[in-house]
Image (cartoon, rainbow, N blue to C red; front, top):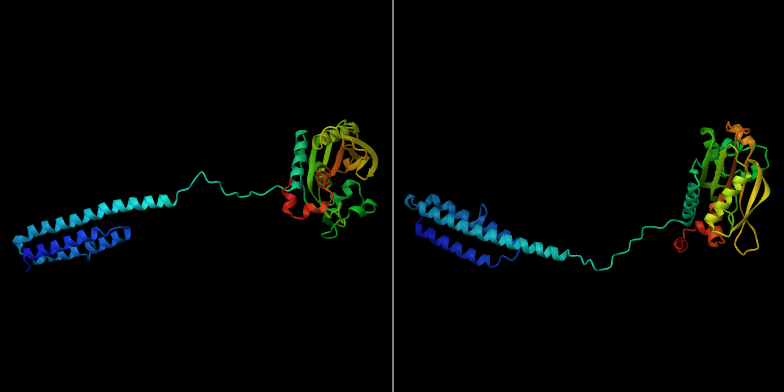
Length: 335
């Protein structure tokens, strides 16, 4: 048996320890150690409760009240310190994560459109405003859409200049975007108003003005009653929109297998003396219209093709086509 006085002494000793430990509760880790030491299942207060079985039955009520008061006191100390330490920890975390919104931000570059992409998109925008649609097609084409449908049979002299990189005996990388025109006309009844931008390939030796890979935009308009006068109007409107007012344009005769008559388009800057050749154009050859199922007695059309690199070089004074493909950020970010 344990006397009530002995139990009271033990309770007093634990209270002294509680008071001493309370002064050392400076963080959540020490608070957790306090909980285990006094309020845990194997803690000091739990050990005192185990002595209840050895207390005289007459003193058990008093002993129980003393132990419960001790446990309540320990829980109050724990709860009060936990709330205070939690708030302190939160304040410290907020302070450590504070952001000064007045500081300048860190610049993260988002990338930059290549000049050829910018020029292509501007050309597309000009013709879209004129009422043309943008059409695209495969870069790997068959000989029929590359040549035969465009009035360039296998024995035609122009075929030598435009034969490019063959994939197999009848399939090759397209030398121009004209096959897109053929595919659109095969699937569409007149009127047809399209531009065909895209990458092209030719067996050109790389130098300041030639590249085996280049970018082109071709235009096609097929409808009843079109003439060379309509072609001239569209060309002048494009030149003034892209290069600016004051530029002059003239047409001179030429030959292309898929247009008749065919012309070369020349341009002269304000105040300049020399004319610059900028593109080829002409009225769509009746044979091409027949190949796609159109009646050349009912509809006529015109087409022209321009090089995107050529347009960019003329507009921005670039004298070497190779800089477009150099991946030099010093060049790319200028525009």
